Image (cartoon, rainbow, N blue to C red; front, side, top):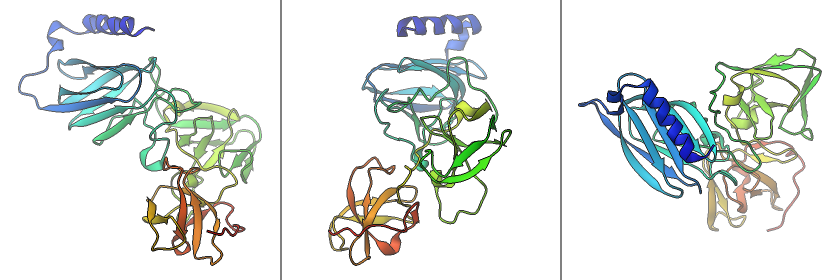
Length: 318
């Protein structure tokens, strides 16, 4: 649907549902700034309708622009149009908010890091920095459709024998095999159709997606709120990963006196390529991780917290 027609229909709907006085905010109510930052190449329109009392807002931001609006405190039903898609949900305005709309195509700025997962438009923001995410390269729109989103937990039931993997790939190691009728409630998904669940077993020092086990696409039936699950970054098969327990400097050379090119934080991951001849440092590649960087460097071996096939790491000379 074209944007002008879309907006016209929204206001016709609002006019039918709300009295004329509903287009003005209550006098004396607290006001909060709502900052909309549009990093995409298409305009963004956000319509807010107060759930109790009068109050309707139409917030529009041109491509590449940023605007701040003043909104009365309250909980609003929201309808958003961006990237050629519509999405519905709620917006709780009880503090100042910043809503960042990322580009419609290409790798997302917050491409699934466990500390900043892609957020669905049906969720209510609870902090000052909440990101609307409209997909990433090769993925579908991650918000709900204009028809709304299924409520409740996501339920998966295997339709035949299913192989469950340690990472979302059939080339990853097998976690278990379950028969038809096996059921579980996934807690996350990837942008290519895998569903992850926490197996409920002890996993010392594992974080984020590394705690999950993965169900292949189209291996069972799904019901409930599966489309509202967060789309997360997941480790690639066959790679050894560094999962730091605390800030871990990445040096330009296997020497702590060399320059620091990056500092890995908890919930950031990098692939381990090998160790130096002394075994005191490991070569890491941030590219297959979730930092958004493609830098390589060296980490002290004493700080390593590894996951994956890490027993036969090669020796790499500086």
